[in-house]
Length: 151
Image 1 (cartoon, rainbow, N blue to C red):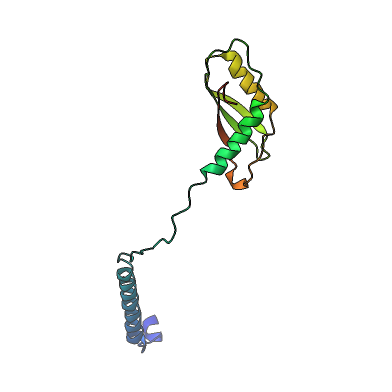
Image 2: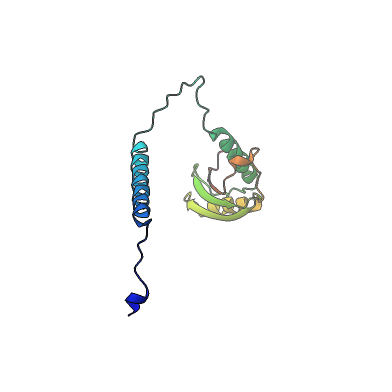
């Protein structure tokens, strides 16, 4: 009885709306396919002609700064009397941004404990260490090498 109360009505735009939806989806698939194909080719290579040689790496400012640090530390080293030869001691030094010494770690001993301890005390006593002339050269971790006869 309810089917008789409401007669079935045809929707006049059903076919047109389905056709429009299908057309939009086909257009979307076409754009995606062409977009991917256009981007799948290799980029063109660029050739550059240099007029001058590329700049050298900034090793000179770093070496100059480390020399200033070693010079300040050497002024504080009190050499032991029983030191023979010219042994090398290597220390890893961690700095704060203010160039104050945070930690000192002996990486390689010189073989003479008195000399190693004298260098370690001199590094701590020299804090704060000199700052580099160029702030971009500053490194938080430094490897410093010391020999008794290097002055």
